[in-house]
Image (cartoon, rainbow, N blue to C red; front, side, top):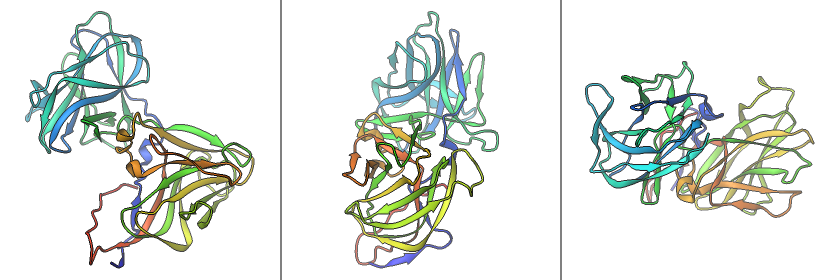
Length: 351
C-alpha cells in the first residue's frame, strides 16, 4: 500500500459544515386542526424504519402529535397522504420547547433505498395545540434542493432556504436526513486556567493518511494552540497557533491552518486533535451531544470521533459514547491507494 497525493486541496475529515455552526431560527407553526409539517427526503438504505426523530421550536400549548411516513406525489413533490412501506404513524405528547423527540412508528416501514418519502407531523386529534417544528436556517444565499421542508395550513407550501432537522432510525442504526440530524451545537468556553484546559476529539482512521492542514471552527478571543497528539496522548505531532489579533471576525469563525510540516497517520490508531488555550482569556468551541452511541454515527466521523479533554497535561478523559466537538477537521493531502489490500471508500465532503 502506498500513500498517493490527492489532486487539489485534498480531502477534509471530518467534514466541516459551516452552515450548522449555530442553531437556525426557522420554525414551522402548527396552530390549528389540519395543519401539517413534512420533511421530504430520500431513503438512505433498504431496511425497516422503526423510528423518526425531530425537534420542536416554541411550544405554547402542547398537544398529541402523529408522526409518520408517507409516499411523495411525483407531480407536486408534496406528501401524498398514503402511508409509506406499510407503516403506521406513532404518537408523542407532553412536548416542550426546543426539545428532540424520537418517535417509534406504530408499524415499521419496509423501506427501499432511493425512494422519496415524506416525514409527516400533524395533530393526532387536535384539541388546542400551538407549537412549532424546528428547521435549520440556511439563509437565502443557500437555497434548499433536497431534503426540504413542506408546511400545510390551507395548502402545501415548500420552504426554500431551510434544511429539515430529522433522523430515520433502523433498529439501532440512525441516518441523518437533514441538517446534522437532530444535533444542535452548544457553546463551551474555556481557557488555560480552567478545568479542563484542553478539549478536542479522539479519533481513529480506517486508512493511512498524511495531514497537511487543520480547518477549525472557533471563537478565538484569546491566543490558542491547535495540537495533534500521537497515540500516547502526550507527544505533539503538530501544533499551529492562532493569534487573536490576526483574524477577520471576532465571533465564531473558520480558520484554515496549514502545517509547517505535514504529518503521516496510520490506520486503526487513536490520535487526538485538541484546542489548547495559551492564556487566561476564554475561547469558545461547539459541542454536540447525541442521545446514544448509535445516533453518534450520524455525525461526521461517527463513533470513531468523540470528545476528549484533560487538565494541566494530566490524564485524558474520553466521552466515547455521545459527545463530539464540532468543527475540528483536517485536510489529508495523501491517502493510501489500497493497492495490495482492501480498497478505500471515500464519502463526498463539504468545506
